[in-house]
Image 1 (cartoon, rainbow, N blue to C red):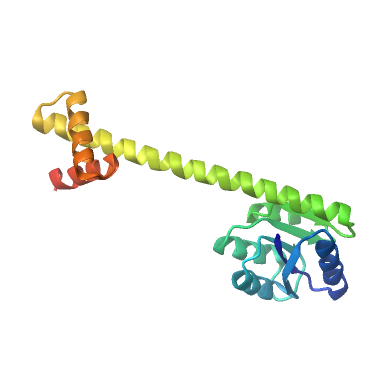
Image 2 (tube, rainbow, N blue to C red):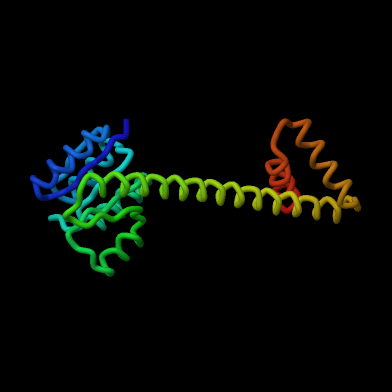
Length: 189
């Protein structure tokens, strides 16, 4: 069951949101009356999704979203009576994936949550792919550098230098990148 944090300073709207979410099969794991409380409850309850009102006391919803996302990336839908461009662009800039303008119905709320979740999953997959590509590039750089050192110091061809690194990797049971970095650290010191 999807766990949702609801942050809304108006009690009636907060109760409406809770009712809509629960009737749609979501679990409301926490309710906040202001942005500071939303950040603390997000940390404490670790929701799967958050619905945050833009205009709240103590800390506005956009800044609360930014702080929540800094600690733990989750899909966030902003709920507001204001559809102003500046507010929408601030929300997008903060990393929010959905936007819902009051008054809204359950038929508006559920698609906003599902869209935010889908976009969040896409972004997470892209981040993982970028990290994997970055790691592969770093490994490639280390291996190329280590091969260059072996070629210079030992008079080996590129294929021979690579074969030596690969053999050292197999014997030690360590990844090629680790062997290459160790060789660089040892021979460049």
